[in-house]
Amino acid sequence: MVRVYTDHPEFLNDIADVIRLYLPMEEVLPAEEGQRTEDEVFISALMHCGEDWRAVCRCAAAEGEREYTYIHPAVEGGELVKKRYLKRCMKIGVFRCMGRLFQANLPWGSLTGIRPTRLLRELMEEKGREEALRFMGEEFDVSSEKLTLADEIVRIQRPFMENIGSGADVYIGIPFCRTRCLYCSFLSEVRTKKTHMADYIEALKKDIRLGADILRDNGYHIRSMYMGGGTPTVLTEDELKDVLNYAMEQYGGYGTEFTVEAGRPDTITKEKLGIIRSMGAERISINPQTMCAHTLELVGRSHSPEEIIRAYNDARELGFGSINMDVIAGLPGETLSDVEHTLNEIKKLDPDNLTVHTLAIKRSSRLKGMLEEYSLPDADEAEAMVNAGLRAARDMGMRPYYMYRQKYMRGNLENVGYAKPGAECMYNIDMMEETVSIMAHGAGAMTKRIFDGECRVERIPNPKDIATYIARIDFLAEEKRSLYGK
Image 1 (cartoon, rainbow, N blue to C red):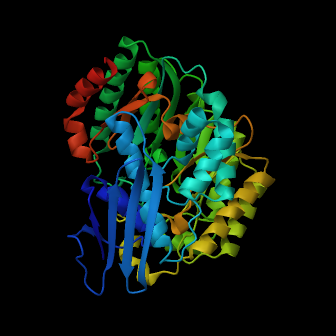
Image 2 (image 1 turned 180 degrees about the vertical axis):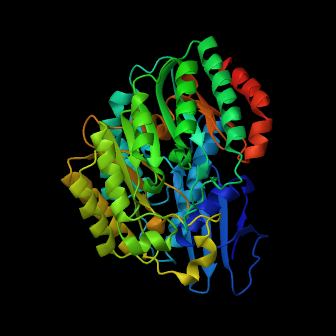
């Protein structure tokens, strides 16, 4: 357990995010000044403001006690600006103080946000490229390797952020899967014979119709469409055709890019692929996660490596121009050689995109409650696995084009999407960098409106519970109409 005393309690959650970089599974609770028992870690974080701002931090644990003071020139500006910099000072101070006591390889330094490329892009706009890179390295303690990666991604993304105008993306969510993977934390349900899919599809279609009306009435044009999950191909052929046909009718098309995250090969048939392709989708995901049969069985994915290859070849035969494949570095029981085997098998297929995820041990996953039963890689081995993914992507002629991070990732690493030049997924960039408004349909989906001139994002989450989502379609439409009419 970690107890934190701070004179800025409004930053407690942000301080807790930094603490979990070093102690990922520890509970973090507020404390009174000086409160501590022998079996706890105690953090004190105080802020003094004057001509120089000083974050004075102390970390006490069984390993010893350390102090660190971070100094930053006072920042002028409005209250929101000052609050942002005060929080930044506090987080850097705590990070460096803990770093003197707990040894860890943390390549992203004190950064805890999911979008480091967005931060770098904003710093470049404010300070210029060279100063922004220096600032992230020296102030946030980001490694040179991660700075190089982020810098390349920002450069590749730049053309996709031009001439957005009144464009909006459309997301269609199918929050159902065939089985639930051991590591999964997504809010998806396992489809069974008792699943009332007809009720969900009826509500989803109404959601689509109302959303299309809202965008049309407010002068938006469709930039891209993305169907995700869950696993969209858990739908039957007739259900899949019904939903996709309806979306095309209501929106009048999909813009310049249409992606379907087919996902698990045990749900993919040649007939379903044909339906997706007939709707104009050029991009599809076929996600092995690993090509090791024993790992697939261990994590609860009811398919074989051979089924992955079969689904991939079927998609190529039907003319999909861009195929993505996902892998996960750090799966239970896997070693670096297992990951290299997976990557070598994928190189034989030669997809257009490769997404390399780092295992994140989420609290809502089955894995979280069973950690003592599995062997997981340490931070150094996880980083070696991620680097193997980068090398494999380069071997296939791919470049990194989007990236995001999650809490509780092995080695405090990242997820990276790689693509051959011209095969980048515009929706992935739009969604992760939050540069384009998104009209989202389906339980658990997130509608966003980007107020470009104000650097502001407003969100409307759809209920995660299926029954609640179905009951609130009309209310959600009213909220969305109000948001897009501002």
